[in-house]
Length: 385
Image (cartoon, rainbow, N blue to C red; front, side, top):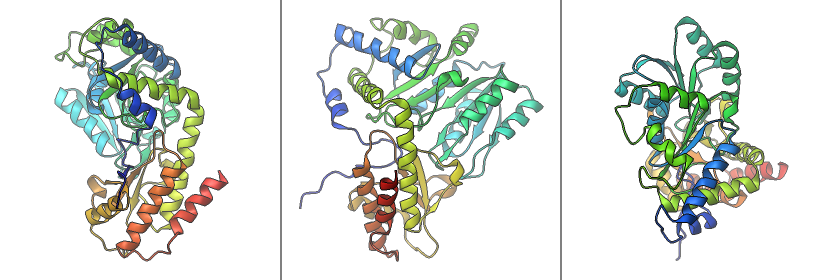
């Protein structure tokens, strides 16, 4: 019997729609081809305009982790003090990056499933002098969303000199955010909310971040140095490193889709779908991995119910066999549940297929639930809007 490829419902990569696939499949051209030069420039201008950045947008071949390193090394010198807020696995990754770079660093860590609070950040910055604040907007290991809007309001009022670097890998394009809130550096990658294949690091640097880089001595790094990429981003006919030509075509199509939908509508859709997914997982007896008031619009952690004795890998393999690829958990949650990504260019049909596959797998693995329980909750949520 023919079986289609499973839906990719991990927290990245996300499903790639046909028009983006077609853009990636365009003939590869030289990075000096005038068609690419023009489209690349328009794309950078769109990224700056859409997210209200007063500086520069960078599009660089590489992973989200590369973008994380690029985001911090261009604004933190060895004389600066860095405060890293961690809500889980990827917040800890930023701690590791800063530690390896030898930065003077302190940390604020939340319990798994909770978030560092704005008050905690305020107290810490009031007790000691820090130059840089680093945080993760959406922590994909726990499904937690950092209260970024409240944080930026507090920072503007009480700690305006601190440069803010935000890991937006799992949020940009799916969760409310604009650079003019007061963020200096925001970063993401292509395979999350932009709905493209992996391969691009995308980064916004505001005017203050660019000025900070220009006040620093030469970096002990080349590829991630703003100074090497700024000339290219300002004039896309120039060369520093070979751009990922076909992924630039794809990102251009992704941004066209975002503009057509409208950013505010896109943000609302992600929150709506997240509630529907969590309602359906709850109806099947799975517990949320984080406090609901901190739950993100782009990824959910579902913990196995008490009494449901199943090997984690076996359960996820069964969901895969039913046509959907979900992800395992990290750290404290490892083996205790699974993660579902619900970001990018997904629609109700994909959500229905996802919940149906999880429901069938649950029953096959011995979970005592009524067939249709999860689907009914999802359909109610979708119909109620």
